[in-house]
Image 1 (cartoon, rainbow, N blue to C red):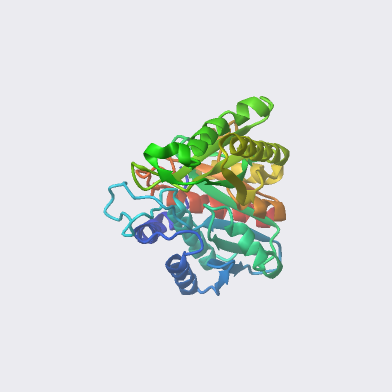
Image 2: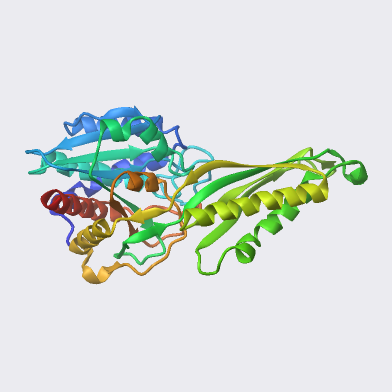
Length: 384
């Protein structure tokens, strides 16, 4: 493994940043403390960070010694609404919120990258570091774009990484073309008539409708999506009721549907709406289905994926870089890949799966990710 020596020396500082962020996780668009730490550290590096981009986003430009293209690097900052069961001494101090997806590690690694590049400015061109809010709800990248990111900070290419427990430690994954599913975050509100549990015949039970709809939803992909297409739909939220003898007035279902093709996403959403209409007709409940967010698939530009693979190989070795994989996840980095060519890559680690309360980012990845970013930037600014 060929980690850049200076970045190996930065590892304790990156780890300290990561642990501080892990202790104080913040949800989407509430990353105020996180953004303040990021801005403070960027200022200490001699940079001029711009805050408040898209709400709590932070952006800084590292200018090279001569004019040239701009390569952007992005890290996400938000945490998840779940408990921290990692058992670490730096575990979350905020009840019900944790960095159980590793965005604390992404942020710390990009800070380390910025520190190295601020000390060793590119000979040609610029590097834009983007610290994005609200990846988990699929709204942050678009909020930054709507807040003027592309107009105020144009870039020629863009790259990001994510930790990946589905890959072996010491390996990386990067592939050209469609890399991550797009998704629609959906919510179904079911309204009935509440009443006594023993007088169900005088009620219109939204719980029965929710249970039937949840079961119906699980069959939509197998029934209506071509087996040659990649798609999935998941119910991840179900809320109703307050007591054992009260039929509630309402119930709520929420989840995501995902596909590598936008048309398949929309077809699946239409089927979800029809399922809602059918269960409403059957039960007498009023059922409303809505979209909370829609994110396109992540599509890596072939030349950018090849460059990212070379950067990974320069640190981990050629045999450690794989391209034959399919991950069903989603990242709103897709919006930034629509704005400019680039690539999204994965770094393997040993841990519980992301979004599991026992998950924790592997600190050993921090200098590895930063070294990959630095090597990638160096190559792209020399060849663009």
